[in-house]
Structure formats: structure tokens, C-alpha cells
Length: 332
Image (cartoon, rainbow, N blue to C red):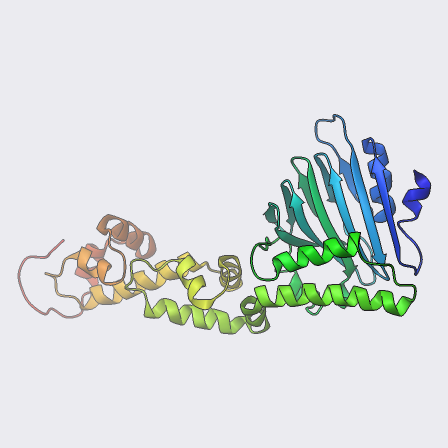
């Protein structure tokens, strides 16, 4: 058993090895021999078994795991000059990739990745099969600051190049011949990383472009909001769709400006209502003023307005109206 485990970490040579573990201790030995230090546990105890097949090409390692339910966790920062990424492709079963406050729930065919040198957790709730590939961060097309926005993000393996990714990694584990030279190993490794880089770049092109100029996203989003305040259907999700970015990225950008998307929409609507109340005729129904700016429920509008300005819309208009465009009873 220990001889097999050691074969998983050759120095500078391509290698393929399979380890079958009949209990949790043997599985820990195999995982620790082949990974950065991680905590491996079976919540609640119980019987355990698993098989690990690894194929190494230079500094890239592709692995296939087949095991019973358990949890793998990197609980602390691992000192590393470069660090590495771990991509996972779910083959069978269900799992959770957890990192940076996000969770990616994977079903067969789905992909996700994590930064393997920072805290993360992989939770396998049932028996599963998974392919993983680990390689140095410096090999990837996009830098760590960009990639940090996509850790523990689910990529559907049923769309785009997802099926090709899964098939390529499967073929590398099960069918690829081990090149003898270091140069040949690196060519195989770089080809796999290039495929993953292209996949992430294609799936996240709009968000990656936005990350390069975040102020542009905020400016574009607020301009879109200003132009659509009268639409009752205006929502954070609608704004995100208009900018071709995820809702999570849009929320993060607004948070950097000490606000939220929903909060910004509400504040801008109330400000437009406030201005209109100062100019409106006393006979104009309060509800009409709110509806003009997408606040179609009069009760909700009145509560939000009073919370923002300390007076109800009717009270505010009585005090602040600067012109009177007619006479007659005040509409409430």
C-alpha cells in the first residue's frame, strides 16, 4: 500500500498509479501522499472505501476519485511560492465545492475549481466519481485576482466545451501514454491547461472584461437604472442581465461603492418622487407620483418615503411645494 502511494509523487517523471483504500486511514494516507495537506473525514463515522487513480505530467496531475461519502478540507493558508488551482469535473453523484463564501453544487457533468493553497472544502454527500486536475497558478491565462472572483462557481458541463473538458481529462487518465521526456510531459500539461483557460475565458468573457474596468460596470449599471426607473419590473437581476454579468458580480461592484443594487434603485426612485412632490399640483394623487417612478404600491411608497425623508409624501408636499398649479381639494 505505501509503495503504491509513493508512486503518486515522482520527481520529474510522468507516472500513473492507482490506490485502492479499504478504510478511512488508508484513504487519508493516499490523499496526503498525493495532495497538499488536507483534513479528510467521514461525518458520523461508518465504513469507507475508495479508489484513486492519478496521472502526472510534469507539474500537472489529473486524478480520478471514486469513493463513499466524506469531506475534504483545506483549513488554513498553505505557504507556496506559486500555488495551484484544482479543477473538478463531477462524473457521478453529488458534491459541494466551497470557497470564498461561495458554494458550487455539482451534479454529473458540472465543473468547478478552487485555489488549492487557500482554505476550501469539498463535501461529498453520497458515493461519487470525480476527475480533478491540479497545476501551478502561473500556467493559467488569467491572474489570481481575476480567478478569485470565480472560485466555487458552478460551470455546467452540458453546455459549450464542458463535455470536451470531461472527455479530455478522462482520456488523459485512462488512455494517454506517458511521455518519456520532460518536454513532452510539459506539452501535454500545457495543452490541458490551455483547454481549461479557453473554457473559463469563453464562459466568463463579459465578467472578466468588466473586472478589468470595474468603474465602467458601475457607471453603465447606474445609467441603465436611471433610464428605467419608471419600469416596475426593474430589479437587480434585470440590471445584471442588461450588463451581461452575474448578479453576484454586480452586487459586489455596488458594495464597493457602499450601496446595493436594490438600495440604489430605491433611493433613485424616491429622489425622483421627492422632486416631483415639490412641483406637483395638490390635486395630483400621491399614488400617481409613486407609480410614475415604478413604485406602484401606494402604501409601500409612503412607508419608504417617510423612512427616507422623515415625513409622508403628503406631508412633504404640503411643506415643500414651491408652486401651486391650481386650486381645489388635496388628493391623498
